[in-house]
Image (tube, rainbow, N blue to C red; front, side, top):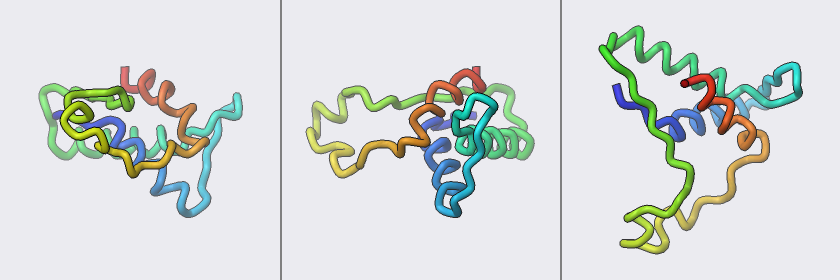
Length: 95
């Protein structure tokens, strides 16, 4: 199973943030996106029972796409402030 980690993380974040539902850990770091990410990842694994799972991360670096089309993802705004600390946290969880 190939997982687009950033797509799933953003989806999980906005699914909870739109309702104002934010979870934080004991250090005050938001965790709602990580929680939703793990929930959906485990659901997919239990449903499809893959032999392997690979999670890819697109961290906004320049790629061949931006070389071919400079405005690639140019209309996207910055990541929400409550999501930023969850980027590293979700990678730890997946690892």
